[in-house]
Amino acid sequence: MPEIQAPIIRGDTVDRTDYRDALPVNLTAVAKPIKGAAGYLNSHAGLVQFATGEGKDRGGVYNERLESHFRVSGNSLIELGADGVTTVIGTISGSRRATTAAYSFDTQAILADGRWWLYDGSTLSEILDPELGDPIDMTWINGYYFFTDGENIYHTDATDETSIDPLKFATAEFSPDPTLAVDKTSDNQVIVFGRYSIEYFIDSATENFAFRRVESKALKAGIVGTHCETELDGVFYFLGGGKEESPSVHYISAGTYKSIATREIDKLIAQYTENQLADAVLETRIVDRDKFIMVRLPNETLLCNLTIAESQGLGSAWSIVKSGVIGGGAWDGVNGVYDGRISKWIYGSRFDETIGVLDDLTGSQYGDEVEYLCYTPFLVLEGASVNWIEIDTIPGMQLDPKKVKAFFSVTYDGLTYSKEYILTISEQFNYGTRFIVRRPCGYVRDFIGMKIRIVTGERVALSNMRIDFG
Image (cartoon, rainbow, N blue to C red; front, top):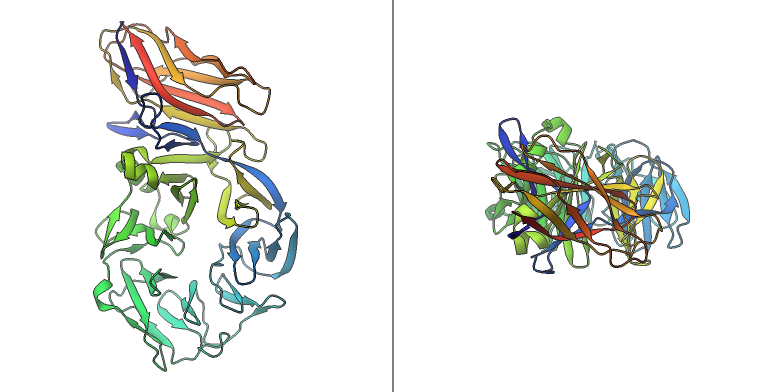
């Protein structure tokens, strides 16, 4: 009987009169050739509780100067010990996400809901300089705290980081759009993000506003919200775009910007208005040399594996991570911080006071099972009958004696799926279990697509689907 291989890293689906990508859920592609396949799907690492904060997480940072991990948790600034013990430092009012990444040689800065605090290792003080206004974002560069209030850009005094002189104000001049965020580049410049523009400023050591615009580096693109930009390996990624285009995920390269989104990702982003996207957040993470961009939308969390994008293309790089089973929602983890003291990524929770660590020994989230989903492309097998399907896994390695079961179904139209076949694909210490579906369907009139659903708290790996038909 003839046999073919089918990729499972990205599948197909139908939406009204359009063909769409069916992205894997809680599974990410790994660029390693294995058993004849170019790569495989591995489950997203789970979350294990590490500490308890004071409320929903609003931001975090590891301050190398003070050698401490700080988080804005509820209405409190807390210090998180390497043993998971938390200490409340003081009150940070507000409810929105806080900017915490900026710190100087002497202080940790926190910007939240237009108010600014400095912590010097012993005292948390709110800075009430009348020139502060209502800042929405900040960074630190060359001895200055550098702010934007949505219109102006300004900075503190070089000799007093708690003071702002009214002469130390400027505006981004390339475009009259709102200024939404500021950050520091790897070549020691301030990057200023507007809604439809990106400009760079360099320290010019003048007496008043101490920075001058780099004329040749402006871009006609910008971000949709203050937290819609992030840096990874010296490259800035952002959610936004130019004035004549829909929002997408881009990166800045050689004086221009390029999209890393697929058509499917753009369609998911297009579900939201710009006001809704203004609350989106971009984060980064590097684990096992895989480089990830996480796009936290209101109802979905999208994950792009840039390492996969480089080796196998963007179509294989994107997936969805979520919490909950059957439907679920956006992934629980927010504001990831790598803490070198324990060599772990630490995440707060968007739902409650839980603080967790990313743990590759489990797929569960705080003990709760998760749902894994993957799909095949549509396979044209006109007139054939499928005898069996086998998918390679790594059985027997789970920590829990509970059997891992898979739910397998097929579609002939891309919309509706058959009744699920339920079979055990892994049992503790039984390393010979095979994931084989026999006679999963009868006569194929035109094409067929397949879906694999697994509900478990264990890690799973899926690769190399083989289909025997006649």
